[in-house]
Image (cartoon, rainbow, N blue to C red; front, side):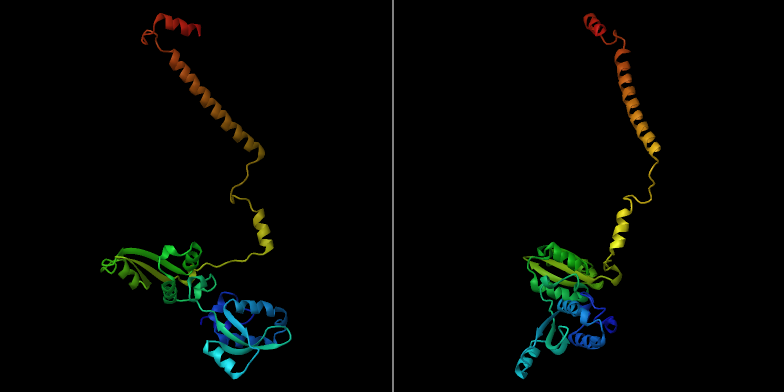
Length: 271
């Protein structure tokens, strides 16, 4: 596994612990026995390991009990579960069998073919039958695209199916009557995978002091007032001008051209 040699109890986290195997955990724990910091952080390290492994404490280490555990895929070893004593345990990496087993921590540590296997085991309704949260987890580690076509057109030469397969995508086909939904999955390049930055309290406080609009300088108070008043004056002038022009248009007309009755004209003048 990549970066495996660099991993120790001090450097593992809930993501890269998925790059290890059972024997690696036992080796890391043994190597850390001489570390004076181990005693103060046992619970922390154990919690990380438990996020990716099932751990069963062996209280009865009879050969038949050990054989049954090994038959179930467990590895047997000794780790320190508390400050004072070492414990014989059975360790087994948690299986990723269902879509509900997928997490943001382990999604980057499975292959596209493994993802297709998991989807195939849980499917029936197609991509849209997955919850949005599961879709988000999958798409954080894989490029996903889908298409639904009549079964006799899905594998058409030069079509989407052929192009995706040539581009390295794994495909899951889900029959839907005479149609087929095809789900294409390909691991995202390492650079595209999102990285989470954990900021310190000091950095967060500095961000709070930054103005909402960076790069814009506040206008001096006098200039702001002048700018604001100018806008109001312009608005007033335009409105008055509009009213004045309307007034002029109404009364500059020749009454004769308007064919107004004398009675109507006298009424306007009285007004």
